Image (cartoon, rainbow, N blue to C red; front, side, top):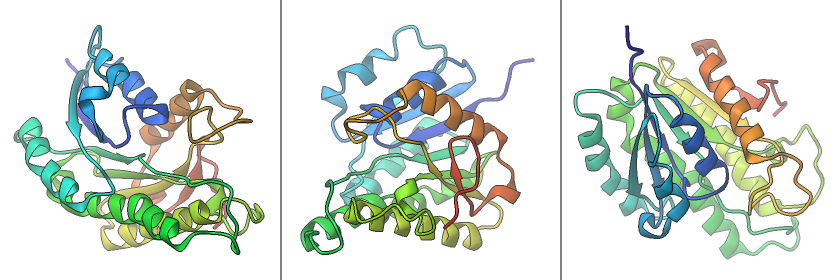
Amino acid sequence: MAAPTTTWLITGSSRGIGLETTRQLLQAPSNVVIATCRSPSTAVELQALSEGAKGKLHILPLDTADMSSIDAVLKPVDEILGEGGLDYLLNNAAINVGMDTGFSFSPDDLLRTINVNVAGPGHLAQTLLPLLERGRKKTIMNMTSGLASIALDCGPKCATYSISKTAVNMLTYKQSKARPDFTVICLDPGWVKTEMGGEGAVLEPHESVSSILKVLGSLTLEDSGKFFNRDKGVIPW
C-alpha cells in the first residue's frame, strides 16, 4: 500500500538550508514539495532538483518581505494541493544584517529585519491557515536561533538578528496557544555552513537538515510551543 502523500511548503528554498531541505525531501516519492523563493527564474540549483527527484517539486515566487507577495501565493498553492491540505509549513527564509550590538544597530535595519523575519512568517501562516487546516499534520516550523535565547547569554553580537528571532519565538508560542490543534515549534538548526552562517560555521547543510527532518517526523501535539535544537533538545527561553 502506497504511503500517503505529505505536503510541504518551504520559504527561502533557493540556497542554504532551504535548498538542502528541498533536496532531502524530494528523495521520498510520498513528498510533494512547494519550494518558494524570491526569483525562481534565477534559482538554478533549485530548478535542477526536479531532475531525478522521487518526490514532486513545485517552485513558486514568494518574497517574505512583501505582504502582497505572501497574499498572492495562496491561490497557486491551493491549486497545487487540490482537495488536499498543507501538512508542513517551514518558515526558513530570514536575513541577518551582521554583528551589530544594542548600541550600534540601525533602526532601519531592525525594522526591515523584523518585517522579513517575523511579520513575513506570521502573515504567511495566517494566509495559508485554511490549507493547513485541511492538512493531516497541521505543523508549522519557525526557524530560529540560539541567539534568540536570553538564558543562553550569547553576549552583545548580532543584536538586530537576535531581537527578531526572539520575536519569532514569541510568535511561535502565541500561534501554538491560538491553535491547540496545530503543532507549532521554533527550531535552531545549529551553526551551519551557509551564506548566513558565515566563517567559522561547523555544520554542513546536509547534517543540519537530516536532523531537522527527524525532529519534524517525531513531533506530537505535546511538543507545540517549544523551542528546540536540531537534536530535539529543549532550549531555554
